[in-house]
Image 1 (cartoon, rainbow, N blue to C red):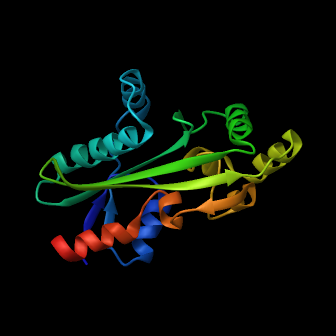
Image 2 (spheres, one colour):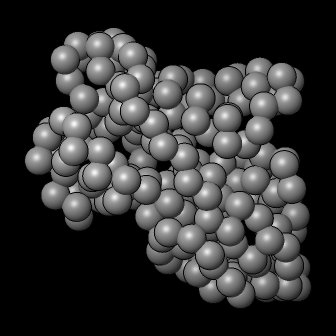
Length: 194
């Protein structure tokens, strides 16, 4: 399979590529996501547009450094009734996020973008719907105690592949999309067009 550059420091995204035999090397984009998100929110951009734009920015930025290479950028956002929920900055914020999601259905939006020579050549956005169980504050705190700082800040407030699965009563959507990389579509594109 084609070697690609992953414009992300996400260990889970790298693992998904490795498990699918897509040879890759990691080169994080170092873009300030919060600045981009804030700017797009002011323009009333939808969560899907924000996710797609961030994935494209990451891929294009790294692609400029590596002409002729295939660069994959990715981004995921939590969409709760049109409101974007970003990764927590600390444990107090993580608890507040879980309280917002508690007992509600939300969408996890994952976008991927492939760039070459600094320009997007393909992109795809997918959504998964997750319904969180109604839990007491004590149960939410106990859940957070089980999560390491690294996992909490890297994977938002839940890791669907780990402890996070216990938070949900219903999950509709592709598991890889929830983990931040809809790999089936990426493979399809790479197999057919590259």
